[in-house]
Image 1 (cartoon, helix red, strand yellow):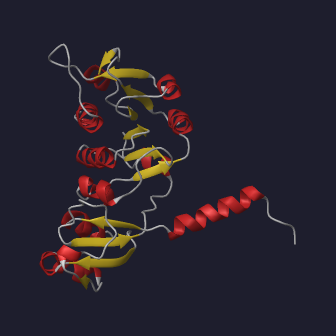
Image 2 (spheres, rainbow, N blue to C red; image 1 turned 120 degrees about the vertical axis):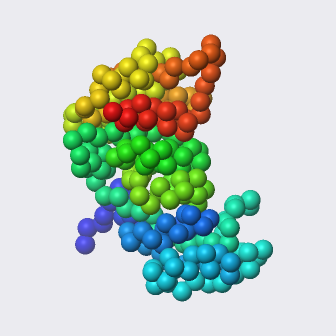
Length: 259
């Protein structure tokens, strides 16, 4: 039998590792929404007596038997300081499927968020929440150098992780080019942008739009910036002003989706 090439072995190993990967979600909202999501594979549920009472209806609907634990000695591998509220669930990461189809959505117009190395899970969680509120089709981020699904991200997203597609892609620039071929207009958000986000929103009120956000500090990388069709800015009332990436995403999404 011929020996498999090294790259094939590594690819298969990566697939097995991904299939074996699990994560712990914590907090009442995150746990409730994970249990209520039929697409989420649940492996283990740990709750305090009080949290179990609060989640009783959702637990019964899921048909899972929880482990009851002392909240002061919670037997779950969480980071110190994690506010678990007496509830944690071990799950498999969600598989959202074809990211390109997710971006296009089901309607006549799609607004997708693309993140360029935004690695803080709290920022990504807040962006997912805003994307859901303002009707974005998906949030796309590179599999490397961006925040993975974690308990902290899920808690900040307050349930949006279960409903708003958060698709991990290979190369952001390649994904941008693919969506441009699908008719998306690339709007990069940058403080030095030449146009007001509100004006950009009016100009592209009917077409597909991708809102491209960079990490705080470095901002958009060179190739990402070059692939944007326009760089837009959020106007400030004073000479100096800035928002963190999650707040800026909320403002820009409101402008792009308010119609």
